[in-house]
Image (tube, rainbow, N blue to C red; front, side, top):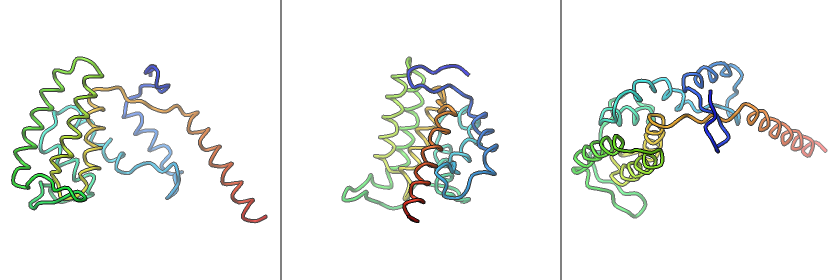
Length: 185
């Protein structure tokens, strides 16, 4: 592990993060503030395949299946939708728009020379993906997972040191104790 700079965290291989999650899994209770995100765990298991390959339509569909928690094949929406009062792109234009977007992000990320330019291009891709709104549901969650994947592909993973979690656990314990005392006094 090596320091990652001003963030105060450390760089760590996602595989070792997964191992740590497996170590604490028997001790995590349902609805615990420390309950790990099952979606993240499943994504980390697929991480190597996703990181080593470029972003494609199939990768987008795979991520959507993970978020939608579906065994069925994911596909682009077959009808028009709107977000709030705002109509989204016509459903017939979605496949072409996403194909162009995937090609554009592939080229843009290859040309990104700095972490800052990579981050900007990844975030623009994220916003463009949301504007196309390719699926009938869970576009926001899918796009956030996609953004995380893009960051996994090219940026170091930041892990919060164990002492942070110990401190947070101490705070939760203290708050719980205070609530318990106030309820019975």
